[in-house]
Image (cartoon, rainbow, N blue to C red):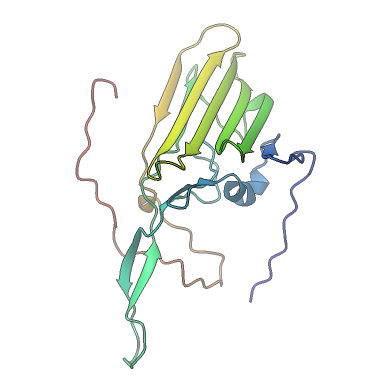
Length: 218
């Protein structure tokens, strides 16, 4: 059995609040923990707490309860009581990714100069909110706000809000909202030497794109 040491998040970056989980500094080192802690879900649909830019990340995830793929289990010899079919949870297409470009510069948190950063999961409203003030390499100051939620009333519904405001000057702004089939990128297989029967690399694509279209510039 592999021993795992608990990770303690620094209190000055994650201050205590009775109804909110607050993050006041982006730290790539804690992505594995924060992507789990900042997840939003309603028991049917769940979104891991990945940042809108899509990278960096520890593990992406958009999951629907009961959505899985089956695969045959091979045994050296067949015997009564041996399982013959395995089941693997499969990600559905990921709609969380929203990329931002200002003056052709991408917002990339590990290298971006941010004078203000806060991400809050509010347990009363069920919303995940993020506010970033970003200074681009060309000196433009940009306020970026985002909100994410999964509906408790309509269990199939997730909603995203993304706002960009220039705090000084003008600049061309490009917002790219993407729908990504994560299976094409590959699934995590655990640590070297670690066996997890819940994780399996499937032999082929589970979801096939059958139609895509563009409406003007959308």
